[in-house]
Image (cartoon, rainbow, N blue to C red; front, side, top):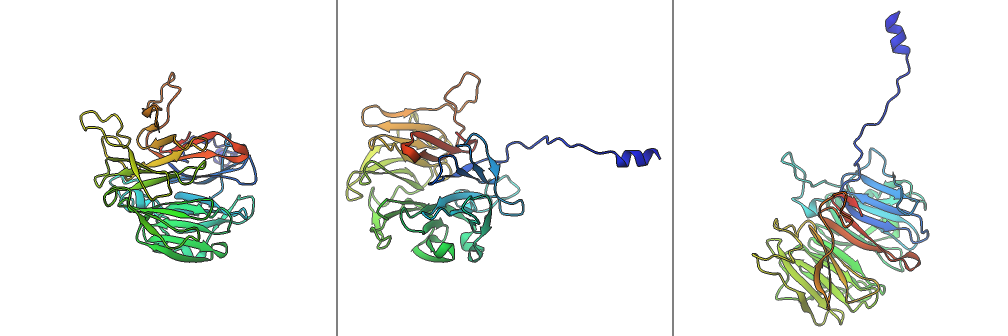
Length: 348
């Protein structure tokens, strides 16, 4: 009788954690039609949505779906797509020794305009799309581009059709307002298409290439201004290059300092240029850029290279941004000026 009373008693549960499900952030998308909606992709925590301009978040990937979101894009018709699989920035797969890599299982698209639930695009559950490095939507056409370890792919017809347009593993993809595409391979080889998104040409910004991963920043103010943040073949900081004429001529605007005085070593003493490497151009000033690696820095022609954030989360530190940056982007809706940083510690 005593046992029955205990069995019939209602049990109330309290969630004790974990409370850091989001984790590393490599993907952020602002809803083109709403100032309140945002989607956040987390490498180990799935896709999240905010309808409060980032003040609160809730998950929109189902528990049984792949949670390893690495890239997100929204096409002009409002559909949101995201890619999964982070191996392109680590060693290709997780292991018991603590590798942070997470394998994906393809590309997902929003089921409804609200972007509250997603379904996998059937023909992307293949090895080609298990490592998605970057994704960008065309500004005027309902198509998007996906950079994978197998090449750069163009997706059309609501994602049901994909075409390889640049062979060989690609780490980065950016697209201009006229449809011109930029992409970069893991060895720093940078290519640019014409305005149709075809006829790619290799950009000679240094002798050969930086040697390691290069990220691309295009000025919103003047798209002839393009910046490249490059890692060397050993993943140390190789420099920053700029073109003012769309790629015909390049100048190295930041060169590495000496190893004994590594004041501008954005990738840190561990040489993490393969892993945390991002660049952003101030949308209001084509001569002002932001660099993300282990730390966060800015550069302009007057002040040069300046560190701008602390890595220490202390009560009195008002400039703290967690180490290992992966995204530098702006919410440009309604001419907005808010900059967001995605990193190993979430979203800042």
